[in-house]
Image (tube, rainbow, N blue to C red; front, side, top):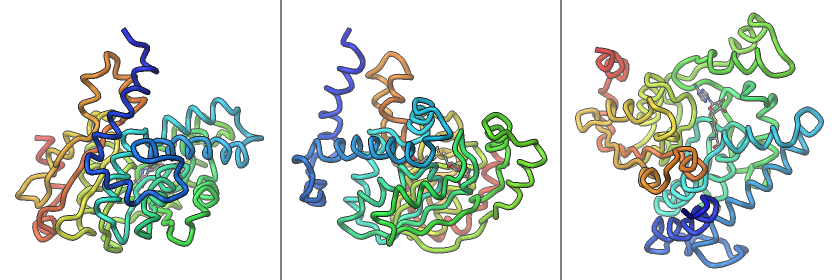
Length: 309
Ligand SMILES: C[S@@+](CC[C@H](N)C(=O)[O-])C[C@H]1O[C@@H](n2cnc3c(N)ncnc32)[C@H](O)[C@@H]1O
């Protein structure tokens, strides 16, 4: 059996080529790229990972061990195949405005900004920006990591749909500087919640809370900010067990939404171990708004209640 690393490298060229059979990305690639597609976007991804490492060392170097930082940052950020699918969607749809839900350190934020340079999309990034994994002061990092495209970026510091303090409490109780439960909850209580549409978008990328109810509520609220034909890309459709069932429950013709594909699914059959799949792809649910009117008339809480029987 071929070593997995070699298999991945060999597979990447095929993956990249198959993701863009019409070679559209070449048209939108910038002249500074090191070579023609298919290597341009994977190279960019690799360069961005290196830049992330340098940026983390510069902001958090004195506070955390370098290896620990990279492990947390890489496992919490989008993988290569997912990033390529996003790049393809941006190149094909040329959105004027993109919504990102869940930025963490800003890797996917910068990826979206870089992918959309040719069409000049504005990116609105929404995240509570509280401690995530070992990192505090995440917003400073997002802003400095994305500064080259900062004029196209707007940050909103909030929870989408619902407060989900429990997701972050663990990190305040486990990592230095450790807070008491009361201190952490008091800190989290200051984060506002956005549970109504606040803008309109052409494309959205959701990578926040991946629980069943959170996925249904977030996708529905985001869909209310898109017009008919718009796309919502939902991360972790393979690596989080509730995401795909939630998308299947919500995305019906009656509700005005369609789950068109789980991008990355075919990797499952190419690798023996799920761990190896996750080096490349966490899976993206590709949701299309079929009918904005029907979306408006859907009650997402009813979808959640019905799934609980
Ligand atoms: C996996 S990380 C995102 C990684 C990022 N998309 C990337 O690929 O670089 C998940 C992020 O979701 C955010 N998040 C969690 N719950 C959220 C909510 N209710 N609304 C918005 N963002 C949320 C967290 O703060 C965290 O930064």
